[in-house]
Image (cartoon, rainbow, N blue to C red; front, side, top):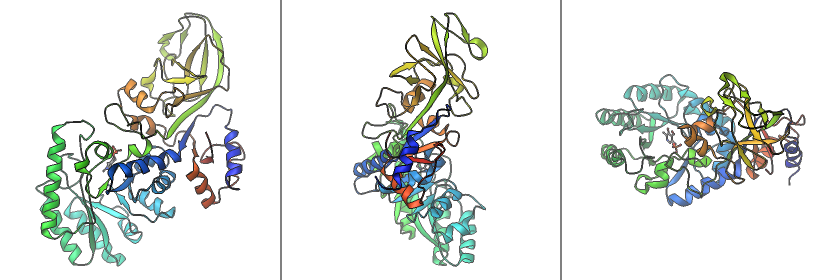
Length: 417
Ligand SMILES: Cc1ncc(COP(=O)(O)O)c(C=O)c1O
């Protein structure tokens, strides 16, 4: 263990006892997931999509772990996020995945951040800013092939290509990429998948006939990366899969590992009789003499209120226990049964599933949503702790030794679970 790692690892041992929840992010899992995705796609490059604060896992740390795993590109949504990655010293290609008028284009051009464009107006605006900066903007033209979100429709695509080529001829932009996005890649066999593939091939062919020479053509999100080799082209853009999550039926394949564990400690345990109504609205009553445990996190911190009365989503002392009644703004009450329980006991909401705890996928299936929504609910709401070799290296690079001497886990780095 390096000198830098030692005090941080000690900080980990002192995970605070005041009941604050914690999101533990396993950077080794992120690194290994990206390595596995790279092997899966063969010759295509991997852009790790770390938008939405790295799907709640922390953008910069996740980006570093993904790069260590072999990603050669990063994808974000907002230019501000791309700029943050550059400020953190990341020099690999970064693409902002939505084209937005009046964004900080000049700064993006200065920092070699790749920009998405889907309209001729945006090409013109960025070209003007590139002229001011004195260097060409790197553009990826987005084709709307069936998602009906960003990008140019088939009707507008020839005009977008013409505008981009004119700006390129003037030395104001470089057309680096051609891309599109699937609507239903996570619905195996959906007829739109083939239609979108064909539409993307047509859009690429039209652009290349007109003279575009892209470095990368890209279409595949995570589900397509996993299941649709025809969609890989030069570059794939997995997001959730980087973090061991997937929206395909059944979730992620077992060669990818969920990277986030959310846990808290019981702040109070009390013995109660059978038939006791519990929590707001008295929607739960104890079925027998039992112990109730109190957790200091509720829907403000990320637990969906829809999880009220969920029978199997909490894990403590090696067993699943029910949420007793309504999830509160800042509290959840658990029915712990007759077994031993005391304040300070660890409760895991979800994790990789190794110990029998639920996964985010299981939460999603129980609540009728997707795992991405479960993990991102905790973004910025609970302190994050990083673990993994990469985290320790990062702490060394940042000179973060000795932080967290008060036992705070926010942003801390640990070497082991
Ligand atoms: C343009 C784009 N590409 C790639 C992704 C990654 O998708 P996923 O997390 O399903 O792999 C997203 C996420 O929604 C996206 O918007």
